[in-house]
Length: 153
Image (cartoon, rainbow, N blue to C red; front, side, top):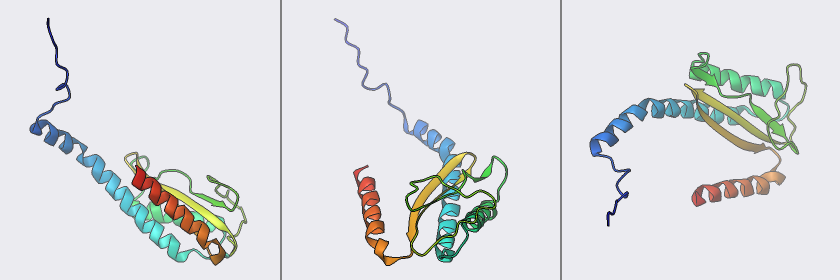
């Protein structure tokens, strides 16, 4: 009787692993750079956000900051998708059109979602903003749910 062992079909040598890692390095560097720009823009936007801002101005400021920090270059680097700045009952993916006069209010809950990319490698993150402390339990529950999901994965 002939027995065939398939248990080592995925086996690779250390040299092969090093070569694969070397080939992936440009991807890692692109993602790291896109993530760093995203982090910086997120920090800046959180600092300047305030009630009374036009939503269109908020999105344009955010996107222009991404363009500047990432050195926008056509399909090589830039904004990954239109900024979502959904208010209150709108779950996601709303963005103001040019000329929209929607103003961010003290009692609004806003979900801000934006992405950066380098060479098509997208970094995407969303966060929720509220100015009225009555929404603090909602924001904390969202943070806890996110952290639980990350731990489970």
